[in-house]
Image 1 (cartoon, rainbow, N blue to C red):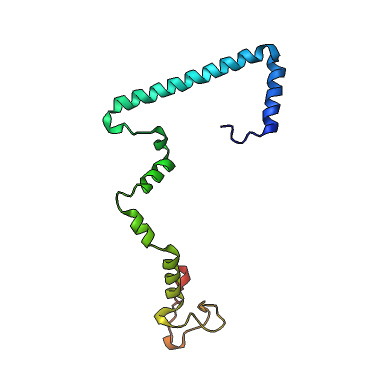
Image 2 (image 1 turned 90 degrees about the vertical axis):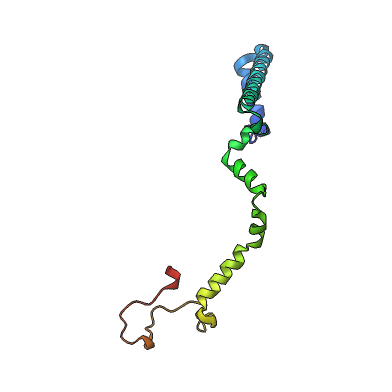
Length: 143
């Protein structure tokens, strides 16, 4: 909550509190606020314990932080009950994408493309072998 509060902001808040509440009432105010925070923590802890006892022994390890979707997913993916780590480690996405790009750029095991084209297919040239075919050429990059 106060992670991004720097020393200058903290000093400013203390000076502002002294000016607003006065040096006489400030210690009493700090005690009241700390007592209130302590009661809120006790209330939340007792509510958590009540919920755990009502859910039963199946949920004795239940943490309310697990209700956060990111925490839940991280916890489920870290536990390797389904053997997902072996699948995840055996799958190299960069290698697979490089193979797909090579197969698209060089069909039939040919060289990656005409000299100077950088592996790109020139879609503006007509194919002489096709004859009078009026269909546009197939664009591999568009699919």
